[in-house]
Length: 104
Image 1 (cartoon, rainbow, N blue to C red):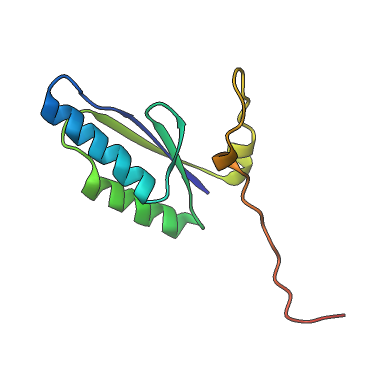
Image 2 (cartoon, rainbow, N blue to C red):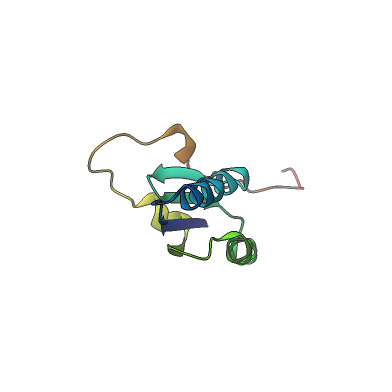
């Protein structure tokens, strides 16, 4: 699953810029990568992990501005069409591996 965070934070005053910058830095530190300006995404291993990270967002989100979060499956994420620009190296697809404990 991918967790996508969309945000629009006020940056008129020095304190607001500092708050917005701290939030972006927290996102990167927490494993998110930037898709576009103010759009960050993170790979999660299932619904429980996604919910855990949504709760972490609630705790670390600034009080002002607009922040949205969207959870999509890998299949849905893979259907993104890039109209202009290129796929970033940080957008690599998650690989699914089947672990086998028995050999034939």
